[in-house]
Image (cartoon, rainbow, N blue to C red):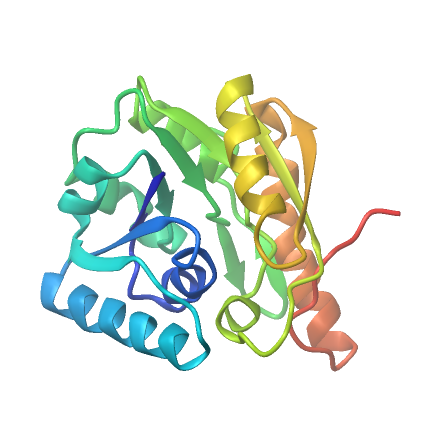
Amino acid sequence: MKIGIVGGTGDIGEGMSRRLSSRYDVILGSREADKAHTTSECTIDLLKQRGFKSSCTGVSNQEAVSAADVIILAVPFKHLESTISGLSGFEGKIVVSPVNPMEKKDFFTIVPPPEGSAALLVNKLLPGARVVTAFNTIAANRWKDLDAEIDVAVPVCSDDADAKLVIMGIVNGTSMLKAYDAGPLAVSAMIESLTPLLLNIARYNKMHDVGIKFV
């Protein structure tokens, strides 16, 4: 399976590539292909030092979309629409949104678009794509820190049952993540609102990289 990461040179994208490229062909995308190439080479070297082979290639965002079976949109919400509008070829592919529309004022708060959630906006902008919400509540530092397992729950929702199962399989095979079926794509607003909640908990309780578990 080929996994393309749009915005793959950001902290989330780079961290995900470290975790996924030993098991999948990861295609890191960026607005600057040279930057993506450098990041991919660093990922390969890092995993090699740890005794793992890595399949990681750095290209432009468009090349990542074109080559991948699964596309992860690792971009901030404020850049989501402009990034998607400049790309093509999503039809029939699984598109994963870990995007959380939020703002930091006196505290972190959810600020959803008129569609109700970032994932529903993606679904509107990409007709024909198989949109899945996943990975929203995992901090970048946890993705990047290969010395520690990520032992948290990952709610997953989609209107495409088969696409949901594919992503839940990726989740369950990564570190110690545990996927939970959260229902249809309309649930994405609830999932996206968890991240500002976790950030507030971390801030007011002097914690770091807080995650969730279901027991």
